[in-house]
Length: 445
Image 1: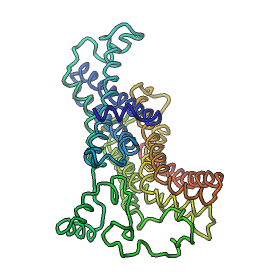
Image 2 (image 1 turned 180 degrees about the horizontal axis):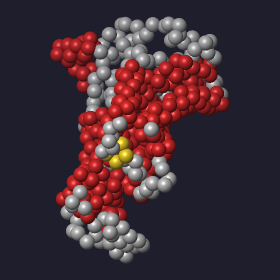
Image 3 (image 1 turned 135 degrees about the horizontal axis):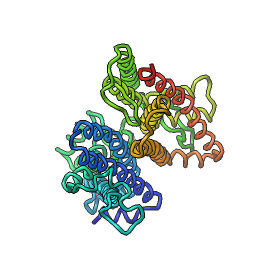
Image 4 (image 1 turned 45 degrees about the vertical axis):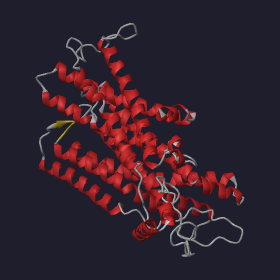
């Protein structure tokens, strides 16, 4: 009931994002049901049905990733004053977020089932009744348990993923944890600190420094001014976003996985392996080529935060001004939040570019289900990137307010945003084209 009240009481922008999650879940559920219809109409080809089901894993992953991004930006389940007093602690808020995600995905699955039954001709009274009766095996009875199992995959996986990612965590250093446990064991002050759900280290990583009152170790200074983090002057705010303590560590691993994927594709081309796994749209490729494509996609996703952090550092090189300094600081601070969705978008764009370059117009046409799958994956990845950008904007709202108080013009903030977008496009655009050309090379020769 609480999840329903928080769902209906949200703002229109939040409702729009939840509606997009429902639409993505509907598209994925329809693809899964079409796979079931193909298996019913072709009982003599179980390997083909299994291959179609395996290709549906990509839209499922894209939908779950988008649902997770929407759940992270849901303001209805953020900690607010008074919620912990009525029993809505971190675990309850996480459960409400997972329930809201499950409701959105379940709504989409039900829409997919209605549309599937309508195209089969089981539901009448609407246009295009039974338009795909032959393709969806309208003459055979639909196994309801199998259909409900396939439709329950996206809500179940999405809600479990949201619960695991947004679970309450204590990100304090080991010394602070030991000190908090000692306080909780020997004094009331420690018990209060240990029971604090969101004040110091909450689900949204709002950390309090050790120099603030009420935090163990309050006599130690919060931070030491350096050349990169100068101390603010008297009566001034620290408007620039703080630099992260360390750069993302996934760049070397991502480059290694990306190189391994390209090497696997090149090895498959050299060996001349016979095609065994047809790709969507009439293409054909060996299993090793598919493994290479998967490794390149994983490598781009892992290397995305490191590349974003490097892009922000390059913006601040060679005597930066206020504009480049602000843009670079924001990129470095938001590298983890923005970099991974950006890497996934690059992986999807490189795969789509490779498939478009390999497509033969004289061959078989791309079917409607393949088109739906490509549109679904592309839309989900782009929507995930935009949602992550909205989350980053909300996360640095305090920095933006401090800049406005210091007299920064609005044109400067817009110029910094345009500079960040241009720098990311200049880095990831050529990288996507290079990876796409190298990924399409084994199948073009």
